[in-house]
Image (cartoon, rainbow, N blue to C red; front, side, top):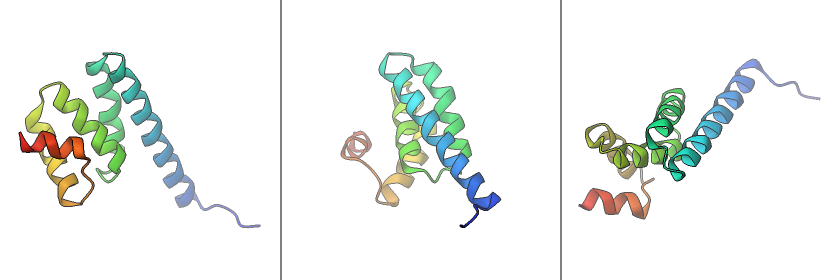
Length: 95
């Protein structure tokens, strides 16, 4: 039986943390608590080293909805550059 390494356990924990905070932020956003959702998605974004596409998309969407365009723009540009942009995000960038 293989044992899990500490590094693998830490990576799994961080991924789960990001996904849980992303889901909670999206739930808050969907019920109109946009400012509160921002604090959760920002934590997930920071923990992900900006490399989790799902978190990046959610963070960009929430920032955009709060009219924080200057902060959202680099995230959006990176998503497009990396080929990870959704049709919704591409539409926002074309405006």
